[in-house]
Every structure is written in C-alpha cells, then in structure tokens.
Length: 196
Image 1 (cartoon, rainbow, N blue to C red):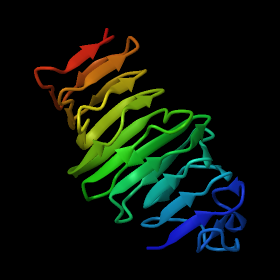
Image 2 (image 1 turned 90 degrees about the vertical axis):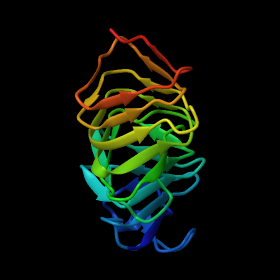
Image 3 (image 1 turned 120 degrees about the vertical axis):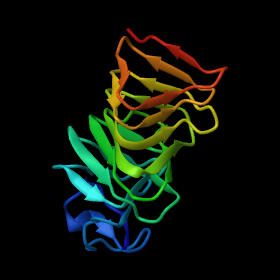
C-alpha cells in the first residue's frame, strides 16, 4: 500500500502525473489496488479507463475528470475512502468494494459523482456531508448510511439487495425509482420525496 500524489495535470495511468510525496517530482508508480490517490490543488487527473485504487482524495482546487469511467475503491486504510473537496468533471462513476466500514464525502466544490455502487456485504459506508448523485445509487451488497442526517439526492433510481439507512435525512429523487430488494430504514423525521 502506497500513497500517490498528483503533482501534474495528466492522465491517471501516466507515471508523469504521480509523485511519492506531496509537491514532489513526478515519475512514481500509478496508484493501484490498496493505494491512496491524492489529487492536489490545481491538478486535473483524467481517467482513461476503468480504474481500481484503494481510496481517493480530491483536494480543494484539484479536479478528477471521469470520462465516463468507473473508479473502484477497494480500501486503503483511511477513514474516508472517497473524499472530495475539489471538482468532479464529466461523468464519474464510483464503486466501493472495500472490506472495512468507512466514511464517504461526495460534496465537492463542483460537479457530482454520476453512479455510485456499494458492493461489499460486510461494510457500512457512511456519508459525512450531503450528497448528490447525477445518476443511480446501487447497493448490491453492504450498507449506505446517511450518518448525521445528511441529505441524499439521487437524480436517477436507487436499487439493490443491500441496505439503505436514511436516519432522519431527506432523500430526494428526480422522478426515479426507490426499488430496493434489500432493506430501507428511515426514522420518524426523515423525508422521502420526488420518487415516482
């Protein structure tokens, strides 16, 4: 497991994008399974295909350009497995498969994850801020929790055989379906709106 810092604007799969230290010289190996990828301020990293890494942090001022591809995070040991304070550009899909329960921050300065997939039956992923998905939420296995009542907006549909815990949050859809074959729980002050 290694930490890689995007110190240059470029493609995810290029060693010229990555350094082994913050602000360091490029040329480090590309972040892969179990690694932490940190996209630094003013850097724009572009996916050129579906990619797996342990976890990802888009720092304030940094950008991850999705290109319509999926970034799979399979756990790197950090508390927050996917953490964006920067910009998501284009269509970025995120799949969380890590075997340990982690937190999740999708609320950056601009742009949204399109499709989010949760796929590990032993893990709970907990929002630490409000989240908006530009597409669908699929909980194939495992649990997504809205944590301290953070709002969750899913532009498309929500489904899967896992568990969605809404607590006292507001869940909003833009006419999509909420059709879990698993479990949905919501507390007495929670609200579900916009579901057809």
